Image (cartoon, rainbow, N blue to C red; front, side):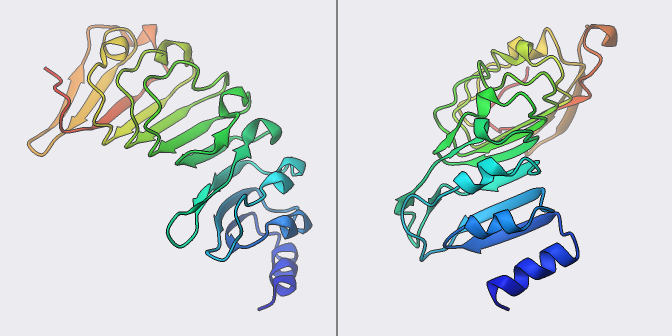
Length: 212
């Protein structure tokens, strides 16, 4: 199918979620029904892939945009989420992702492969943030989680630098779910649920972290 035929289909059926591999994203402004986009710059895309067309689409609620691309990852680009009004869910991989800490409407954040993150200080200013996920990042401690008052889910996967969860464990958590190659453990803290009613459970998948 041609690009115009794809645009026609999206508009005809009011499609809201799409996965796109392209050289140029400018056509997306012709598809106002789209709310959830996953974008992969094509191997043939030039350096500095342009995401700015998304800044003029307030209907966008969820984004996953690749910023490192090319057949051997030789090209890089950036995207500024603070310019996307009303964005609620963002998935971040590698570098080049800017302004996420300024997004007040953010509800879900997934971060993978960011070795520069050391803790949760300044991760978000959103007062409606509910879910945080970090995969293979450079997190060493959970300092800053106390500022995320609306969090309901915090997931940490293979963050091998993580060595201190005391900030979370002793003040805010209701249940700790720790997975290792040996056992699946659920630990209840001494804090009554009334102190932090929103948290359901906390997941850690890091074999190097000792819970006891």
